[in-house]
Image (cartoon, rainbow, N blue to C red; front, side, top):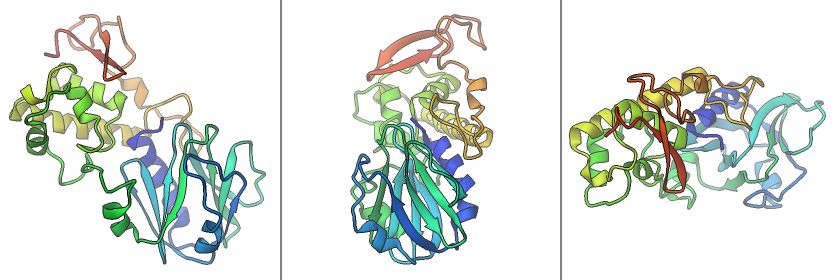
Length: 275
């Protein structure tokens, strides 16, 4: 599943090509996504100028003159800006056609993505739309730090890995990034979040920021279904320290990396470096 760095990479790739452009029409070939595309969406967006693009968690928000398109890539989705004359491939479910003979093309083999309209502008949709209103702070934003994590964890009895992957606590810390961040912070992924002290949370918040920022810089983690908007795979996977390395030597101490299930997800850790 494309995670926050992959979505941010996609946003940065398409934003310069869309902001300020006008929508000529919305061409829907397959409306049956995770949330079916409402038939009236095409009429609502036609003729509107694109004001700005932004991201909230793993949602891309396309702000129009009146309302917002909320886009989620689902399990295997991708967005590309292509000439309207470019023949659609299989699973190219819709085109947001611009007046300059280009379009934003949504590709989603598993049809688990979202492309829906809301009448609110992005700044209001982020606070009120049901898909967005419950979300925690952005891990690269000003509201997120170790003191916030420490306060949110008090009285809770869940593994710290599950805690930081909870989108109501902080958005965008997917499985790969949680594993890597906990390793760098020296925290065992199964440790109860309520038993982690303030200073360790400050260290963890810093490693979460570092891992996500590095991944965005390098183009996103290489996943089976993900490629960048230019068609090239991401490269962050080449620098993974624990994820997917069960039985291999820890890059810090040489101890074999172990794997266990935590919250129904594969967790990788070094038994010597993390406690």
